[in-house]
Amino acid sequence: MADHELDVRPLRKPDKHPTIFQTFEALTVGESFVLVNNHDPRHLREEFDTEHPRGYAWEYLEAGPGVWRIRIGRIASTALPRILGDTRTLAADSDPDAAGAIWKLSMRQRDLDSNVIHLPAGASIESHAGPDIDVLILVLSGTGRLSTECDALDLHTGNLIWLPRRSRRAFSTGPEGLTYLTVHQRKPSLSLAPSLRPATTQTSSD
Image (cartoon, rainbow, N blue to C red):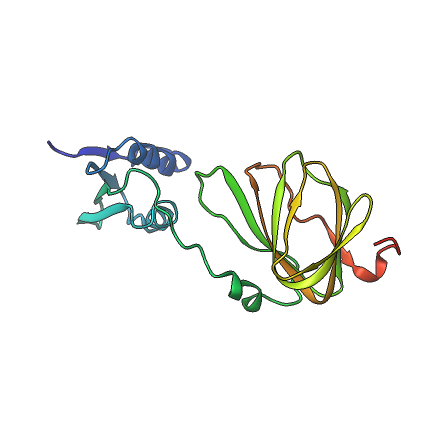
């Protein structure tokens, strides 16, 4: 049976990639379609490498200059498990004075959000009420303190911390700064890194 042909040239630019991925998701293992485009879709292939590494086939049937035809096939029924990175090197490879997310999940189709947050020495996150979701934190490197509504917890590498939904929390860092991984249910509007300020402006209760 001949491959289904998807010609995206007449589509609006914002509609092209979503339409292509919808077509791919409808395939069963072993099926394919032929994408017709007016340029080499290199950025599309980068998205496939992010969303479906090792799980798709990509074959140029015609390579321009006016028309590109690519056969895209499905090799796996779902996105495959993968190694995302090495947490031992994330902090070492980042700017030690920078603050905020130094890594995050990039896949479009996911149920979880995850970030690696780095706070340099002398920085803090002010006391605030967390979002309406539970958050799991793993300290990757450094030291610091987690101030709660009633007490304070000293943090060090290897600590696994649960932040219950809506709980109040504040963070301050030790002399080496603090780098931690967060994992939680996906919530597009969630802000993971409240504004930072120097630790010297913290109140004595922190």
